Every structure is written in structure tokens, then in C-alpha cells.
Length: 474
Image 1 (cartoon, rainbow, N blue to C red):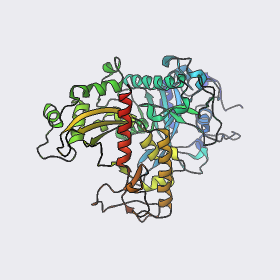
Image 2 (image 1 turned 120 degrees about the horizontal axis):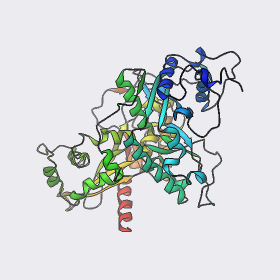
Image 3 (image 1 turned 120 degrees about the vertical axis):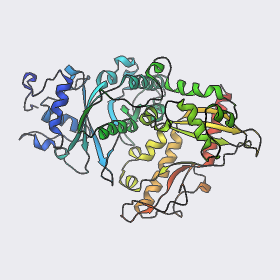
Image 4 (image 1 turned 60 degrees about the vertical axis):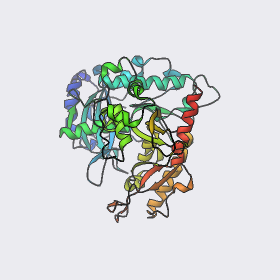
């Protein structure tokens, strides 16, 4: 199909210069493709079609099947990615940034530096647009343009993520891939349930669901946050920097996991009071979150005040949680997460696009303190490990989410309707505190009491006991 112009010498920008392309992209902001399309253009449909239309209509390029970057002369990829609006009129990331499909049998042939992902996505022009349901692609408004070069430090973490994914595929375990396996680069599911599966190497009897390399939603939130704080509609990340938990030089020698775990090694089996003294954590008022304070002081290593708010944890969607195990092996406390966003649940069509899926499929760093003498509360640092929810438990979580959604849609937001801890279904719903008198927005506009997601304490115990068996087995 012919487009308006395919003569690269007559383009209104320098196709070999990323800055020139970025500057030209600013003309699309606050507008839609409707403002630029010419009569007779054949509108494309389906996922991924918007990017092709931007290439054709705005950048005046023909669509091609070239495996490299969209702007090959500039070594830059074009990505159109959707935003949504919150009730407070803030822009929110709608989904992860899909980079390229994974061909299980082909991807194992290339190392990271020769991979399609690396060759395409080191430098990206990110065009953020406002998603609207049942809206013609020509009428979607573009709101931000970001020239994003993956920082060297991020590339080191992404390279490790890539290697983790490839190693699993080489082992014939492509069907066991999870977005929780990695930090920034995920292997996200593509397609719907029931779609045909793909062949994988070294395991001819088991096919695997279709997946694609993607930058996780948590990573994309950092990109959007960077834009929002700039106060500009178009920005480049050349001067991008945030407080770091781990240095680039350290990542050249060790993985992120190895660096974090090494910070805990000097404190194995040490009483929590002694650790607090060494790390200068004030426990004089016996704070309720004292174990979290201690774990944070070790993990942060004076690099930041809260590891869960560090650059690396935020980009990865990684969460540190502390667990106290009594001398009997019992765990008294359930594990709380964030409040349920009733609007988000009601408006989300697919489980894998939900906030809860992102939350539960992300990685956790569990820091375990174990009591030595029953009733003495003489807890010592017993273990630290990274954990990802198994697929069978994610299937339970999907049932949990569907139950929550059904109750929200039928205006049954109350204790009587939620899963309870006593139901022994791994997860339950309840408030974090009884004092939560303010209401959260609901689809009907009336508002409702705040409830949050929880792991049952028995489920946490199951995780800890399984970890103990794995350690015993080497």
C-alpha cells in the first residue's frame, strides 16, 4: 500500500538523527492522527496497529517487516503506549511496554548483545497516548513524547533478566516462565486463554504459551513519573538520575540479588537487638515495625531511607517483606498489601492486566526472623530470599480476584462477602486498620469502606516451610 511519501530525502526530519526525530514528534502532542491523515488512507485495526499508523501518517514511512528498530538509520525504536486517567485526573500507566515476541526455538541462539530486544530497544521514542474505550485509532490523543535511552545500569539488570529467561527456555521450561522471575525485563503472556501454544526447545512433549519481552509496568511508572516531575510534554532522559541502592560498578561484578543478599550475610543468626545497635536503629520506643526497620537498615546499607522506594525496587516492582516465625514454626500475622482500588478492579477486563496480577506476580524479598525460645521473643535473623508466586497459586489468585470483582460489580463491598482468613484459601480481604473511616471511590459513586489484599498466615507459613525444605536439599 502506498503512503503519502516514501522518499526519505524529503522527510520533515533527519531520519538518521534521534534528536531530529524526537523534535519532530512534538508536533503530534495534543493532537490525534485525525489531524494528519489524508483521504484514502486505509485505517488499520487490532493491537499494534496504532504504531504502524503513526509511522505511516505522521512520520510518512512505509510499514515494513524488518526485524530491527523502526528508525533503523537512527538505531531507535518507536513505541506507542497507552495511559489512563485516575479519578484525581492524573495520568496512569495502563499496561506493560511490549517490546518483541519470543520465539523460543530461535531466541536461544543469540546472546543478549545480539538479541532482537537489545538491537531494537536500547533507544526508544515513547509516544504516550490517552486510551479511550471504543475509540477509533485516528482519534486517540497523544500527550507525551519521551526519548528514552536505557541507562547503562538498567541494561546490566536487564541483561541478567534476559539471561534468566533464556536459561529457563534452554532447560525446556518455557511453560514455567513467570514475570516474577526477573526485575525490569519480563516475559509477559500474549494472547488469550485457549490460544495455540508454541513449541519450545529441549522439551518436545510440552508446548508453552506465547510470550513477549516487555518492560514491566513498574518500570514504565518510573518513566512516566520522570516525565510528570519535569512538567514538560516532551523530554529526553539524557540527564536522568535517581538515588540508587546498588552502583553500576557493583553490577558489573555481581547480580542485583547477590549484592543484596551479601549485605545480610554478616548478620546471620544474630539477635535483632544486636543488629539494631550495629545499624543504629532506634528501638527505644519499641516500634511495631521494628523488624522492618532493621531489615531496611541492612538492605539499604545507608544508600537510601526505604528500599521499597529505591530506584531498583520501584522499577522492578520488587517488595521487601519481613516475617516473624515463632519457635513452634507458627506465623501469627497475615501479610497485608495495598488497599483495593474498586474502580480499577471494576474496569479491568482481563486478570493479567489487573493491578493484583502485577502485585502478586512480581518478586518479593522475604526477610525472616525466627524466635529461639518459645514466648521469649528472642528473634534472630534466620533467612533472606527472593520469592515468586508459583503458577498454581496465581491460578488461585485469579479466582480470588474474580470473586472480588463480582462483589464490587454487584455493590457487595462488606465483610460478609469477602474471602476470610478462616476460609483457608491462601488469600483473604479485610481492612488494614479499624480506624479507616474515610471511604474509597466505587463504580456507583457512593464510596465504600477501605479493604485490602492479604496473604493468609498459613500461606506465609507454607512459603517458609517450602523454602526450608529447599535449603535442606541443597
